[in-house]
Image: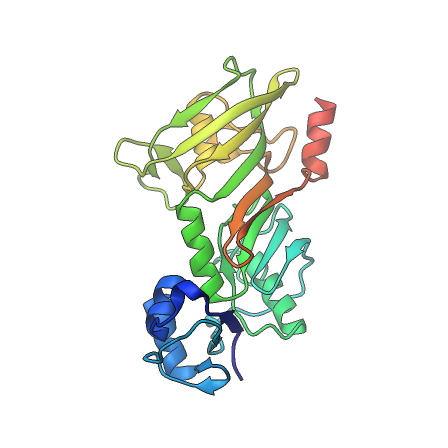
Length: 297
């Protein structure tokens, strides 16, 4: 059994390039991944098996057969409904429902998005494990990217570090915000004596959140938020730090009177697809609990 198979035509600019350099520098396959291919997969040029020292010529067809991916112990597929917004051979874009963690935990060992995706892979004979490019908190709904193989995960993670994965969130926060828009630039770190809670602190990691008011409700504000960094609980911590905790977010001072989970939704997603070499854009409306909250208020 093998993993994914990828093929490329060698262009003129890569004429007389060594296969090793072509895969490492042009296709950006990591050293670790290339070692795994050499040991447990296959490298071919024009359907002939070769080594990484093969010399390439314009028009050659390069084939890389990746080894099958191994799943971590305890990572089992479970039949969990998935809302798949987009799919190709490299990624899934999923609209995650609230009250579902992205990955298993001590408290939710068998019911997570990862378990649902692995079940989907098993049913569709996709030889992969779970690779989340970005994650959402258990009670946050909306869009996220899942890579179907390790190579795709590497490339999309690099896009994210370069700022080419743009995430826009929708939130309902307590109180009327006086500033219509702005940027919160405040480092975030783990709160002492807590393994879950975060806080703004001088020795934390850089965290930048841009916000813009969408509409005012009676005593609340609907806000659009764009992340420049991706720290744990970033939006929740930042909004609470300026006196506007999210509705339903009792961990950071929000009330659960009108909604039982934080009113936060991953609304829009824009990214550069390294395989398609173009930008893709997606958006999904908030689920019923947030829409009801906004309309009733």
